[in-house]
Image 1 (cartoon, rainbow, N blue to C red):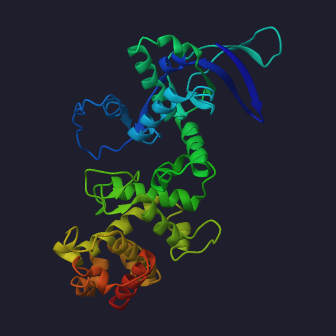
Image 2 (tube, rainbow, N blue to C red):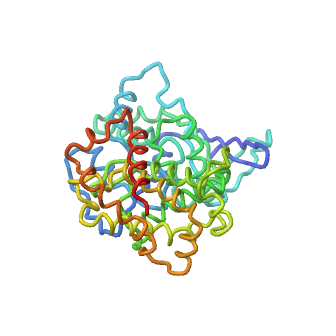
Length: 379
């Protein structure tokens, strides 16, 4: 394929003017998804071609793309059908492959030449909705006997070769964090792959992921990692919990947080070292709250309550004796003795009338109110 080689500092990539038919053959659609230890049944057939296409897309926890939205794909198909003078795809599509492609100059300018095709399909960094819309546009043209129209559609494309999935994920985060409205939990989920992320940010992201994944965690599978809808019950968004952990260690700018010294000296910014004490603390909260933990009749495991628990954890870490005791015993019982009186709050945390008992202008104020009540009852 004819391509233009582009060099920027130490980076090298290619611009390719892909014919629509060709690019649709050479890309694969895959979205980020967590199976939560469950077997996923085959997607049901709905009779809606776009919905069925999206349901059958490969899903993987190693991918970085967000799920396709039916409405957005449908709107793009309508746009492709209705535009005449305007270009159908003026924006550049970004593709990546781990294979190292061969570029041979065509004999003129060194930057113009022929680029080899990869053996496997490209992953899409940016433009999956536009390409999905193009796919269904092509299907409709063929159904109407107008397939030739597609021959007049070229797709401007940037190709990155010899790159890892981490490179693609970092570019995806960079693009969508600055230009596109995307759920923050999805970006946090990929933060460990961003080379410019600080130790504090990577620590917070990794600890939240481990609280989601580890079977010893009372929050296992209860954290909404990608921020979308889930059939399973979720208690808190990943981005919300990430913000609370980051608050505990301090942001890269502020350099202050209640457990910052512990994270640096005892844990050395390793989330796996912090996980045991955090899970023991959460188990203690669960033990103290008894059957109300996870009950919909109570707000004990609501997002605001969980945030308050994490803020209270920061206060407890000021107690050097408590910390040393836990280091010797390493059991939830160390915290149970301190938190036993939190059980007095169970009635106040009933779902019925909860917002009247904790009147606030917003969630943050309500978190502070609950945290204040918890602090009063620490032994």
